[in-house]
Image (cartoon, rainbow, N blue to C red; front, top):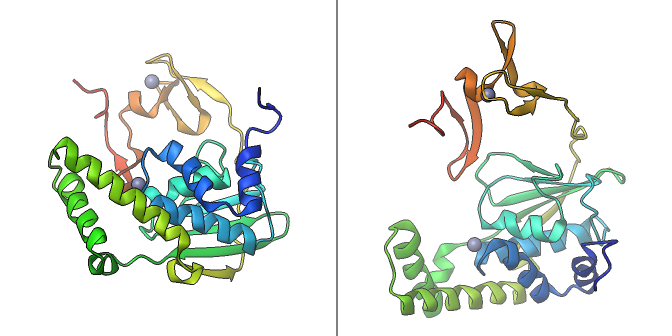
Length: 242
Ligand SMILES: [Zn+2]
Ligand SMILES: [Zn+2]
């Protein structure tokens, strides 16, 4: 049985060795498929860690990743850096750019990495063109592809993602040192029970109604969600509404 002392031991060893292919396999485990942007996320993390002089992240907020998009790129970053939404080491800036800034808090250093990706380059290569056409049909037009076409699409994207790992770093990434932003450590809040639904919510998401605590949803107040289109407000109860 593997040691339970460090659940990220394998990823740390792969990072130290610079084994990008195995790192991509690891990222694909949580991402669900191989694609260009998950591969770019893996490479961006590897490049930033090297730039920051760190070989590992413990997932305890010493290293922060500030991502600027919510596409496949982010899963490459979460899987390899260990900076995730759940451990508060991943911060989401809703700018819609395929970019990430890693901050090493202890050393007060930061590196910003921008993924260079030009869909026109894909068109120049026959397999790239075929991959894009299948992607457009399946994802943009939400067409139901035949089993064989779907398999072909996955095969092409897998090939493309591994090809990205072999390109020179400056062909796929723009890496620069930047001034680190000072970010607060994630505060710990108390939980308060909503007097309407009986569920607990953190104190900052509880309001008072006739002197009783009420969660945002029961109060019918506006709250924010992170969804495909980015961060946006949801007014009133739309999620559980019949
Ligand atoms: Zn993807
Ligand atoms: Zn409630």
